Structures are given as structure tokens and as C-alpha cells.
Image (tube, rainbow, N blue to C red; front, side, top):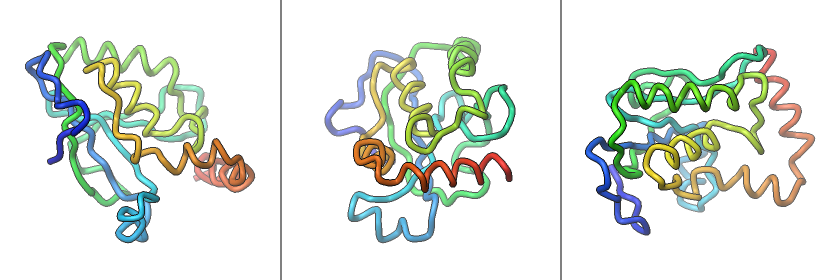
Length: 161
């Protein structure tokens, strides 16, 4: 488990909030060290991991599961983002608020992916953002706009599966 160096892991709450990071592709073993990996992430709090994924319906894409056990991805690491004083029901309330924004059919690799969701959830729960490297490739793609046709095609494939 790692701690956010620049934030000093704020201790304003009593319940730890973690970011679980997963490799999306096998080449992440190499790309990670270059700062260019492609990652899935989930927010772990009160023994539950919350994440966001694509589907074709206008309902929430947020789902919950066992921490560090997200099917289809290889677990890489856990990062302590900070702490919260919110109880399990209050955390669920935050997730229900985010569910209005994070609908399955609105998933987009560049502008609204699992890492965007985790960042928003962590900021609401702790006041701290996730590390920038987790969503670096999406930011690069958005800034360059070179990969837009490729990402649109990949988004379509995600929704059709």
C-alpha cells in the first residue's frame, strides 16, 4: 500500500479511503515505469470497492464489489488517498449522487472513465484527488485529440459487448 506523498495522507477522518489500481493491459508491466500505463481503478471504503464501467443503458455505471477483486483486470496496487468520517450509509449516499452523473451509456475513455469517477468520489469523501498518473493517458489523449477516432471506436466496442 502506498500513501500520497504530496498530500501527507490527511487524518481528518477515522475511516481510510483507498484507491485500488488495476492494469488494463499486459503491457502495463513495462508502460508503468514509463508513466504511460492504462489503468482501471476503484475506490475502497468500509470494506467495499466502488467503480464505474460502461454499458448501453441510461442507468448508473457505478458498481460495487470485493476490494482488489475486479474481474477482467490485474490488481496492481493500493494507494491511501485520505480519511473520511462518513459512515457506510453516508458513503452510499455519495455514490447515489455520483450515479446521476456516471451513467453506463455516458462512459468515455477520454472524458468520463473509471478514473474520473474515482477522482470525483475521492474528492467528495476526503477532499483529496487521485494521483495524476492513474489517468494520464486519457489526459494526453484529450489534450492532443489525436486518438479521438480510435477512442470513439473503442467506446463503441465496449458498449456492444
